[in-house]
Structures are given as C-alpha cells and as structure tokens.
Image 1 (cartoon, rainbow, N blue to C red):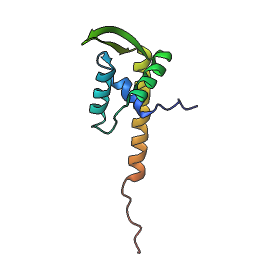
Image 2 (cartoon, rainbow, N blue to C red):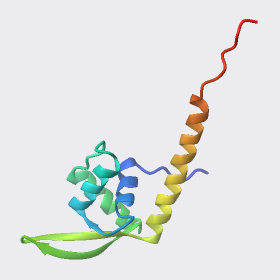
Image 3 (cartoon, rainbow, N blue to C red):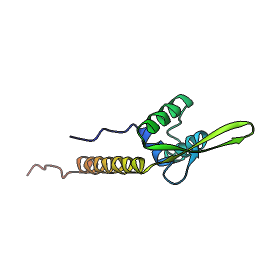
Image 4 (tube, rainbow, N blue to C red):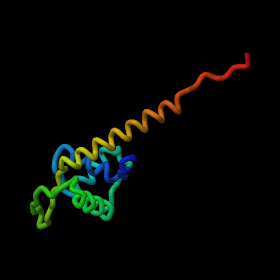
Length: 112
C-alpha cells in the first residue's frame, strides 16, 4: 500500500524546519524562499499545518521568546518529521523520474 501523500504546504513546512527551529513568520518566509515565491502561507493554513504536525509528532515546540511584547513560539522538526520529509522527497523524485520518461521525446514513426 502506498504511503499517504503530503500536501505541498505540509512538505514545505517540514523542509523549512529541517535546518533550524523557526517561529511562525520565519516559517512563512522560509516556505516562500523554498518555493521561489510560489507558496505564500496564510495564518490559517500555517497554524493548521503546525497543529497537525505537532499532533502527528513530526514537529515539536522548541522554545518561546517575547519580542516587542509579542510571544514567539519556535518549532523544530523531530526524527519522525525528518523521516516523513525524506519519504516524501523520494516519492516526489520517483514521480519526477516517471514524468521524465513519459515526456521524453520519442523517435517519430517514419513512413518507410
């Protein structure tokens, strides 16, 4: 049975946390950078993804700090989250390999 597919925002959030803990706005900025500006997470989407990833044990709160009177909660990826991101990366790579094969130019069937 195939593993369940990850949504693009979920995958990008995991990637955004792969190298260091980040707070919400930092995650949004990193997702935008990783997607070359194609994915812009709104607050509702971001915090929905974060809640699901925490519940799944793929990320965890790391620490909190107050900046300019506002609380920033930082999240970090867990081993489970790193493993899930690696599985999804391989799934996407395999899909891209299949797509390249299907889209490869084929010799024209000539009239001999």
